[in-house]
Length: 78
Image (tube, rainbow, N blue to C red; front, side):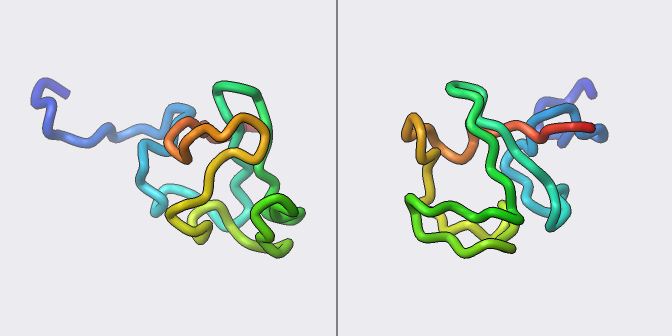
């Protein structure tokens, strides 16, 4: 990947702002406070119902624990 404009071809932890790389079941973790967004649980603080994938969270959504931006989240691998 010599051209900085090229997107990475692998998916290494961060979703890099590209929600198309996420499945509806993807669990993401805040790299600031380690809060995990679990789609099956949703988010009570932001009134996000259970079953809402990370890719469908509203643009204004932030980490309910530390107020970190969405781009501070990384994909949790099994």
